Length: 73
Image (cartoon, rainbow, N blue to C red; front, side):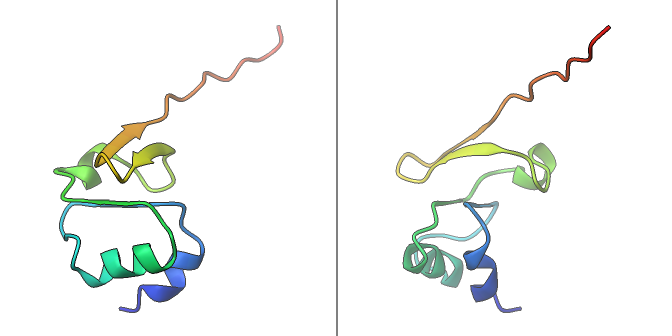
């Protein structure tokens, strides 16, 4: 499974496993994409396409609150 094409379209990488020396981490650095590895239960707590804030320096992943949709009465 080739990861390189994905790094042209993703804004960040959040993964349950992996580390600083893994291939994905190397690609993230090469493409200047923030990445956090070792996030326990990430696939249970986050969903594809969900907006999150990623601080790769601190290793933080913070879900962005979803604004309720308002409709006119």
